[in-house]
Image 1 (cartoon, helix red, strand yellow):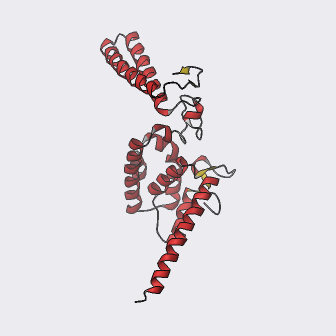
Image 2: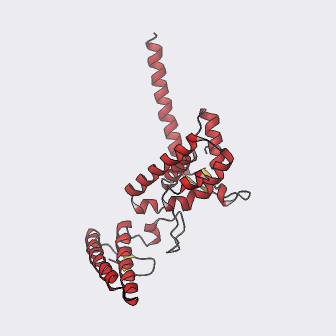
Image 3: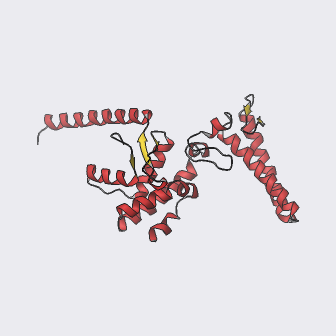
Length: 147
Length: 89
C-alpha cells in the first residue's frame, strides 16, 4: 500500500513504463525501510533526469500514443528526420491554437486571450528554431513540410 | 544480463548473489531506464512472462560496452595488485 503511494512520486511517463514491473518485483522481493528509501531516492533521480534530459532522448524508449509512435523508434526517425526541438516547438504552437479555438468555441474569452498570447510566444520560439535549421527540409509524419 | 535475459526480480536476486548487497526496485528500474535510453539493453519477449514481468537482454552495443568496462576494471586491478606487490607493508 505504502509502496503504491510512493510510486506516485515518480514522473508519469516513468510510471506508465515501469509501475507494473516495479510492483511485481516488489511483491516478489519484499523489502523494508531501505526499499522505501530507495524508492524515494529513485523518484528524486528520475525527476532530475526528466528536467535535464532532452525530450528527444527520452522519447527513444517511450511510446507516444498520441501520434501512434511505438517505443524504440526515435522521434527524429518517426518524424522524418526533424530534430526534437523543432518538433516540440511545432507541437507547442499546435497545442496553443487548439486550446485557443476550444476556448473561443466555449465563449471563454479570457482563456482564449491567454492562449493567444502563448501562441505568439510559441511562434517566436518556432521561428528561432527554424532559423537554427535554415536550409534543411524535413517531411513530418503527417506529410507536413517542416521548415 | 550478460548470461541470459532477466526480469526485475531475477536481476535483484542475481545482484544480491553476486555482490551481497540488496538493490532497491527504485534504483534498479532507474538503471534499467538509463540502459534502455542508451540502447545497451532492450526488452526481450518471453512467451511465459506477463507484461509486468518484462525481461531485458543485452544489445550488441551493450555487450561491447560491458567488454570494454571489464577490460578497464582488469587493468585497474592489475595496476593495484602490482603496486601492492611492489610495496609490501
